[in-house]
Length: 477
Image (cartoon, rainbow, N blue to C red; front, side, top):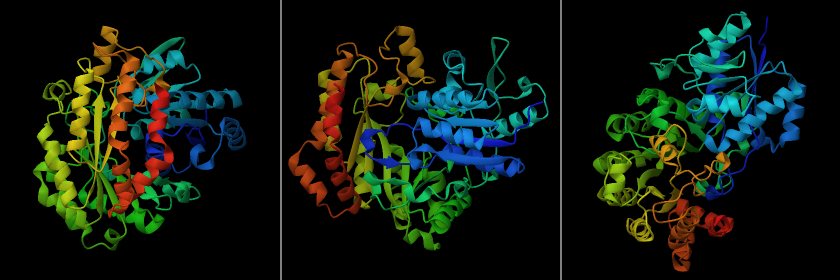
C-alpha cells in the first residue's frame, strides 16, 4: 500500500512573457492548494519549490527532488506552460518511478486525454477545482483504495485512460484558508512586477472570486469554472488584503478575479477598506469589464480612495460584429467611457486588444489601431487571437483546420497561431508588431510617458523602453 507522506509543489523553470518584461509572480494556484492540504491533512509534510524565485534550472530541480524525496510532485499550468509542467513530471519519474506525478490547471483540465497520451510521465490529472479532489485523492492513495472513486481526475489504468465524473464546485469560498505564503517566506522579497510598480515594490496576488458568468468565445476561464461566478465575502477579501499587507508587506496586490463586478462588491469593499490602515499603503490592481466600469462612476471613484490605482479592461476590438462573434456583451462606446472615467479618477487604465479573427484584414486592424489610440488608455497590450484548448474558438478552429501552429509553448498570445481569411499567419504577426509600433513607437509619446506626473505611467514607459519590447515583437516575424 502506498503511503503519501511528503508533497512537493513545483513552479517549474520557464520563460517570462516578454510583453510584461522582467517580472516574478508568486505561484498563486500552488499556494492556494498547499494551504488547503496543510489544513485538511496536517500529517502530510509540504514544500513549495519556486524555481523562478530560486533561479533554479532543470538540473537543480532534479537535485532538489532527489534530496527532498517526495511521495507526490505536483505542478499546475496554462497552455503556454504545459511543457514545463510535463518536464517537471518527467524529472520526478527520473528520480524515482515511485513518485506520483500530478498536474492540474486549465490546460490539462480541458484536454486530459491528449495530455496523458502525449506525456506518459504524468500519472494523474486533477481537473477543475483542485482542493477537495486533491485531499480525497491523497486519502484514497493512503488507504489503498481504488482512485477511480475520486471525482475530478483522469489517469491510466491497464493502458486505458479513465476520466472520473466532474467534481461539484465549492459552494463557500470563504471556507478556503489564506494562500500559504508562510511556506515561501524566503521567496517573498523576490516577487515583483517591475513594469507595473517598480522593482522594489512587493508584489502579491489574491483571489476574490472564481469564474465568470459571461460566455466569451476566446476565454478559458468561464468554462473552467462551469460558467458560474462565485465570490468570497467582501469582508474576507478585505481581510486577505490586510493580511498580505501587514503580515508580508505586500503593496502591489493583484486581485485576479476575471470580472470584478463593481455593482455587487464595489461599495461594500470601499466600506470595508476605508477604516483600515492598509489602504494607505496598498496599490490594488483590478480586472473589470468596460461596461461595468462605465456604469459605475461613483464606485470607481470610491475605490480609488482606498487604494485602487490600476484597472485592466478587455476592450478587445472596436468592431461591433467581432464583439458579437466574441459574445463579449460590451460596446466600443463602453471603452471610451471607461477609459475617460479611469483617467478622471487618476486610475491607471490598461486596455487589452485582440487581432486575428477570421474576417480581420489590414484595414480592420488599422481601424483597431486607431481606436486603441483614440480611447486614450495609459497602457495597451495587443494580442493575437489564440485558440486555447477548452474555448469555443478552439473547437471551431480545430474543426475548420485553421490552426497552423500546434506548439503549445507559442500559445502566449504574442505568437500568431492562425491565419485569417485574407492574411497569412506571418502577416498577422506583422500586423501585431505594427499595432505595438503605432502605440509605443512615437518618440514624443514615449518622452511624455517617461516624464508623466502619474508614477505608474512613468514606471511603465521607462520599463517598456528598457525592455525593447518593439524589437522583440519584430523578431517574431
